Image 1 (cartoon, rainbow, N blue to C red):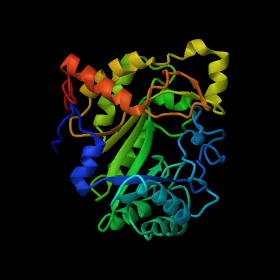
Image 2 (cartoon, rainbow, N blue to C red; image 1 turned 30 degrees about the horizontal axis):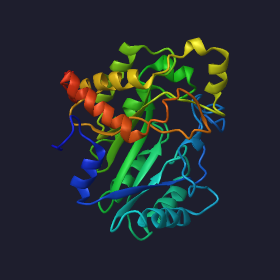
Image 3 (cartoon, rainbow, N blue to C red; image 1 turned 180 degrees about the vertical axis):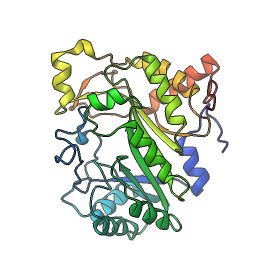
Image 4 (cartoon, helix red, strand yellow; image 1 turned 60 degrees about the horizontal axis):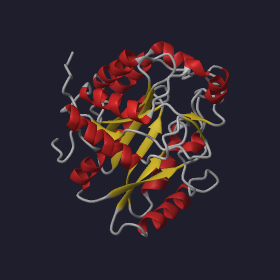
Length: 311
């Protein structure tokens, strides 16, 4: 798929090419947990995690799915005319329940006027064959995207951050989900403790082997109320946090090693100032970082896939 104006495949161009118009995601929080929080696999959650860092104000699990979506539609409808929406099941693990309950929730979202599809964030160890078949069925009439938290391709790192699943499980899950009619996305964090630049560039090579359509990435951020906040306070020397300049320079190398047909959905995430401990990038906004990445790619005369070799 060929997009214009960028040296990489960008998500907004993909959306326009797919739907012919702007389509807005609306985040939902329906009160799910995770298997590494409730004792099923572990306790405490991932060491870097505080889900409050990305939930908008309308996104509260005390509200029904319909209420959250309608409030989100009301908010975005005032900013943009004639747009459709994707219900984004974002917070925690959104396939972590019984199949009947999940179907009821997904269908409640799809029945809201203006909603044309689902984006579902989850873990590689929380998906069943039955649910995969259900998503395949839904994808015949709706846009369905399943977004898995990969976070790292390094097994030692996954263990250290209490992820409670392996990269081998991740690969197996993607294999089960490929060619089922729905989109597959991956999420990765760049700069987790113990990983050097070679490790991070290897992430690009490993995720490129996965049958993914889209990729989200962002730099490691230390946030309040996360286990990592305590670890950082005790042993800051064990963390090699990116400055904005170093991250922009590194990401252009990462892009160069990435499979050229992967759609890049995100380079960074913005943590609310009241929750962010480090690193602080002088209030740089997402669009400003993207503009700097675009400029750096031009300076380096680099592009997505320039250094990619299929294995």
